[in-house]
Amino acid sequence: MVKLKLLRPFIQGKTFRNPAGSRATAAPTRPFILLNPANATPHANYHPTQSAELMHALTSSVAAQKEWACTSPSHRSSILRRAADILSQNIKALSEIETMDTGRPVRETECDVQEGIECLNYYAGLIATAPHGEMQRFHRGNWGYTTRQPLGVCLGIGAWNYPLQGVLWKSVPALAFGNSMIFKPSEYTPSTALWLGECFVEAGVPEGLFQVVLGAKEVAEQLIQSPQVSKVSFTGSVATGQKVYEMASRGMKKVTMELGGKSPMIIFDDANMDNAVSAAMMGNWYSSGQVCSNATRVFVHESIVEEFVEKLVERTKKLRIGDPMSAETDIGPMAHKQQMDKVLEYIDIGIKEGSTLIYGGKRPSNLPNHLKDGYFLEPAIFTNCTDDMTIVQHEIFGMVMSILTFRTEDEVIERANKTEFGLAAGVFTRDIQRGHRVIDKLDAGVTWVNNYNLAPVQMPWGGCKRSGIGRENGSASVEEWTQWKAVYVGMGTVDCPYPK
Ligand code: NAD
Image (cartoon, rainbow, N blue to C red; front, side):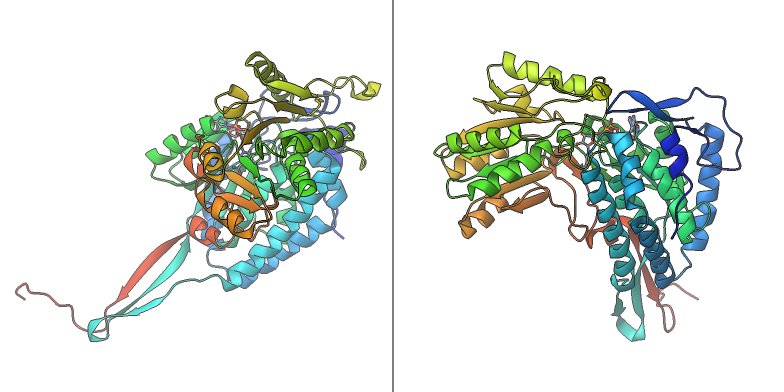
């Protein structure tokens, strides 16, 4: 059983230095302090990675990738499976670290670790069977073949809401297909990425192949602009994604952009009501609403809206808001104070623009003393919303549900698509043809019929419109993490009309 040593220092609140280049000198910078969102007290801190350390990280990443690209898929596969085993031996401890950084309840973060194990095992299997290329015959015995090659050094940049999932969805396929990865987690939530770095080494990943660098945009920008980086896989907001995409395009780098959303859930009058309410709650309250694919625009058929709202409020009242370290807790705090303040501002705007706040939207008043300073909010339910309202248009990234009513199928499809985003969408109906017909017409990369927000690693994940470019996971990841090479093989003389 492998217990990784990074666990204890994180829990005890020590300082972490210089994870990228263990041999580079520690930097005399001001440490970045990580606050536990449940009580606003520091739980760890770290020093941002400095330019010299970034250079060292790049050089060692290039060298490690060259060697790694020559290893067999079965060798890489066995290392990924070992990493999966280490994760399974540390589920509780790892989920507690993630909860300390993000504030998400341990019940949720334990699921993330389980899904991480699935991710490692999935790619361990996929690289053994993924199509590698094809052979073609040409005239006079000439022939050719195509092969998929690694991209080289890949850069991963993560968001703060699902840090462990983010680093796994990027680093596991990158490594599986023969690349190296430098990963920059969000400055708010770096801990599980650091832990994963140690886990990979323990599993047999060679030194330098996977490295974590710490800091904010300055660190990311230096790496995006490095000619040694071939691909940038980014998760974050649309506004940052645009800047990253623009910077990467100057170096003609391959990109994946996993950005924000304002996704619709459409509930028809024949839907199973309990399922629809469950999905609306999961698609708005889970992770305190800090989920990119959340169904924050809930379109309910006008004939059933009263019953829907009644059941929704009744069940939302029962949610236990509190200590995210407790297995009993349904809703933890927001991940950081700025996010909590932003959500409160949007709730205010919603009220001022004329929608009706029928439940929640305040800071809870009944928390125990040790959680009084935490960034807790009640879920907010708004009715009487219209399509053009700010809370219906903007990605808020918190528990703010807008309920909208509709009459006809054509009308709701048109309104659901009236957004700059295109990440996710869901439909609830018992009419199987309608379910598929409607989902087919919705502008979204990830969709569900009679469910919501499930993301098995076998399915591609990513958005259209301004929600992103490219896909993570599924067989689509072969395209995202490799590049074609065409090889033409001449079997005879070279045809040449020029004089000898
Ligand atoms: P963000 O855009 O503020 O930051 C994301 C990352 O980019 C962080 O690591 C940050 O340090 C870095 N960054 C910031 N400015 C940068 C710059 N100029 N150049 C390079 N890097 C820079 O996003 P966030 O607040 O961390 O995360 C929330 C957003 O992420 C939401 O919009 C959410 O929808 C989105 N998200 C999308 C997905 C998805 O799969 N589509 C998943 C999770 C989160």
